[in-house]
Image 1 (cartoon, rainbow, N blue to C red):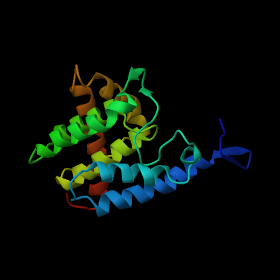
Image 2: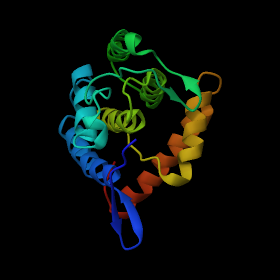
Image 3: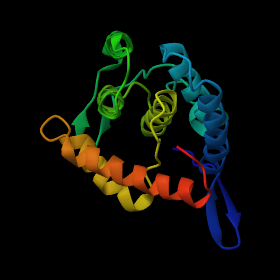
Length: 191
């Protein structure tokens, strides 16, 4: 496994992290520009392409940037959709989701969980999934949020437990949303 690193003052920086951070900002621009557009497979694949563009992953022949995974993967010790199932499962998920006229906070969360359970890409599923969620909250005039480090573990637990207990993820995301509202209030941005 090659890792792309630079030494900076006795510290090692992973080049891929730097590239992905820059790419992440381009993804944010994309979701703002397309906030009101319908959610499609094409757009989701484009987000992945932009996020992973120029990383060492993008040079691996088994790693399909902007395309669904070629190899099985797992998340938090749980199996995800097999590569050959991904396209059908994504189409079904989007059809079900897009059939709902007005999306609620929970509809968007539910889509997010199902997206993460499918885990359509080789890597970057969490980031792409959270970007989609942010876009959809903007679209339906719901205050979006960012999962900061202090909420990460609660967020992962919420994803894992969603099918048995929706409250964990819902509460974590509402907490994150409250934080985001506090930033908006501070800058006197109406919502």
